[in-house]
Length: 261
Image (cartoon, rainbow, N blue to C red; front, side, top):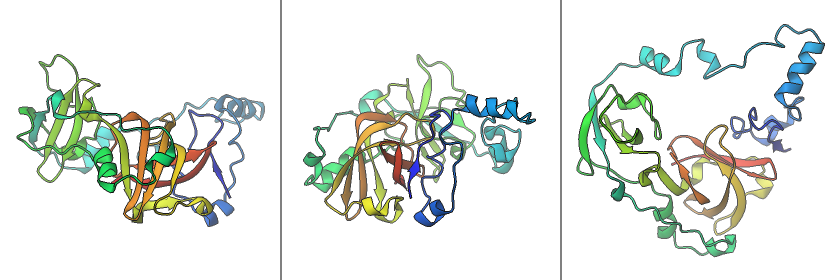
């Protein structure tokens, strides 16, 4: 059984279904996956369905009409912490890509680790510029909600330290620390929908991958090792966040997924 991306790229739900297994797919039907949203609305109008003109849902539909930031503040206690600004020269973004997947079969693990590792910050890495109300309210790549003025460019969250309640930020959306050429998924967190296509340690595969919902698919190479799966992108990806899912595709088919380490 195969999980194919929906024809409407703006409404495709395959990213949210990327952990399905063969048994679950054997019991699933997707009768409107080949249609655009506008076509579905037209069918609903012709059938006089009351939902034909209903507005598209925004955000997390299962928490009601409240916005996500307000929902989190209702559920979690504010906790004052420090915000640090990381200079641009802290990270150096270098393209490691050499083209063919064959090039990576025998790559040293330390090279793969250096490409996919997130930058590590301490309070000595930058300067203290303000306070926040709780590191748990923020995510990597977030721009809104920092409420710190006096900067030449907008601030973006580069990393969160929820244990010490610290935010590390960078100025401008092109800050090098905001981008990486790869990510790693621990072996225990790698899931193959198509188990017949599962990579063995030492094998590679050309794919397209995404790290968040509605993100355009990006050309990438999978490199399998005993420790887990490395995903190497042709172009640097913005705000790769640990704990989120990465999913990979071939010819519009979602082949597998895993939790970003």
